[in-house]
Image (cartoon, rainbow, N blue to C red; front, top):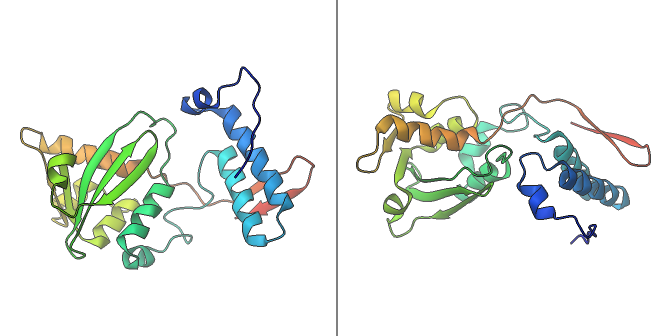
Length: 211
């Protein structure tokens, strides 16, 4: 837990809601720098310094479609870990006010999950009573491998539908093409950046490099 003191006229909530919120990001990054410097354990030091670097750069340190992530691992993990992976890589900048809700049905896993993106975060819960299609409205039916392709940006929802690797069930009266675009927006929230070396300059002049 971190204790942060703000100036009397500083509102961190207002700063966070803005699309860039540089003040809050810079302040938290500096705190993570200090916490990382004070850590004796390399594991925690790396966590803090990587977090500080991501806050400053506004993106991921690694390439989601590169060596850092193995599609075979994503195909093998359980549903909770897969959706946690998606949620941890959501980029809310510019999409803070976007709202998306969809039911994801994995035919090979016989599982149904409702994904709800709101206020810059992605939440999910299992649909155990088969009410998700009525509440979420749009339903995406596919296997785990096509789902991983969507996450890794190696396929789009439209491509999977055309190749019959997935199907989209739209609410009554909803245009099918609009439903496909709506679902694609969800997966577009997961950014793919080039893997590159990131150098962190700490307040006291010491430099550390992470990849």
